[in-house]
Length: 199
Image 1 (cartoon, helix red, strand yellow):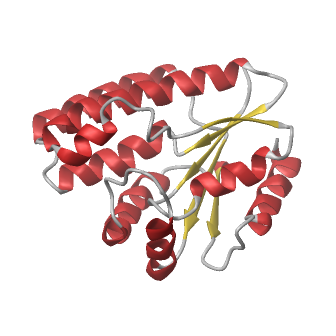
Image 2 (cartoon, rainbow, N blue to C red):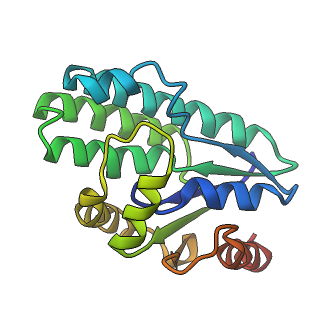
């Protein structure tokens, strides 16, 4: 079974850009969030009745991506976001905003728990943080469907912190990307150095 790294953080923090930067190194195979390709994302943006379908679709997608990435033992799997982020971050955020009711949230939690019991957690979770001004400017400039907003960043991060507190320090790497360059070279170097030491 191959190893897996997930890049997590609030919307707009730079997860996709960092995965693209790392993907230039041929030791990685990648998987992305697929905003435009998902069948319920645009519908959910327009109508909250599609929130549950969207979250179920994403949890299943992430499980499928993890399985595919781990089949490759020649490269390290690198996932933009991931199963844990979609539950602990987005699903909890949408429940807090009443986009999911409690029974719908409980259904997502049951599915997430079942999947995570059958698939191991990533060997490394890279958690990205940036100040609100940076997150806001990055979100404004990107061309994609955003359900979460920059105003959700603090709450979103609090949900991630609650999850990450139980993750071993040997299994996570926290990076402040507020002043990161567009090529994310500094963060990419930090991750490659971590891999060299621990993988």
